[in-house]
Length: 157
Length: 192
Image (tube, rainbow over the protein chains, first blue to last red):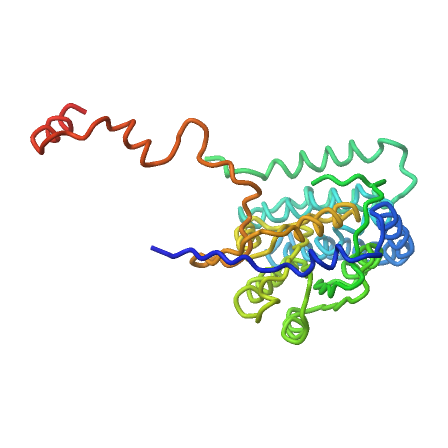
């Protein structure tokens, strides 16, 4: 039987947060948001570069794809998640999450669906457009989720 | 855990030593902008586990924000290393784990590496601040149990589940009174 030991360490961060000075919550959040807006152009350039890598990777993917090719695409997509919100195109984060889910499901099942992967990459390109009409991204994301959900869950018997 | 974004409550991160681990320049850049915006001034930026181990060995850290680093998951291994190998006080340092995506095969590794809480990307400044304030709360014990070393992740102690009670009492209720002798016990087993 394993033994369990509890330790109650002193958390220095607790004391530091209480020291006089600092910022109000409102000031801090505004500063952080302003900082993020300053890096938006760099983020857009980086995210666009990742998209181009993904498009090139998709083009070179053999049919049926090998696991290494899917792993490469996963590695590209996962690096982009989080940047969409900073770039003002938050739907890209959701599309990339759906693409990562899809690739994870495909690799777990040893399956491949070129069109399912390709539609995600094409959607990524589309959703990079910051001038999409209001509500324009949602039907695209719905479609991607449906595609990914086909491969979620246990393999049918 | 929800924070009013218009709150005038004050907090001070200026004196906190914060380590950031993210192997992507873009991810690191986003983290730096958020954490400096929240007022942190001493940042150790690490792009690899080796750098992070070096920092955790050389400096006292008040907070670590560690990316899981999918697809390798090396960030989780670093957190486990920090819990089991780093010296005090860093082995107890609050750790926020960020993750862009966790493959199904890595969920248990992410859960059990010893981080305080996992934050899914994209990360909003408000969410980051809420989590920092949460991990800084006093009185959270550290648990050393078999293969797990890290903070006790139970958010609250509700006691035993409703209607079940303590195990000793359960036994007494379910089994009734103990048979007086072995023969009666045998009868009871045969009847059940």
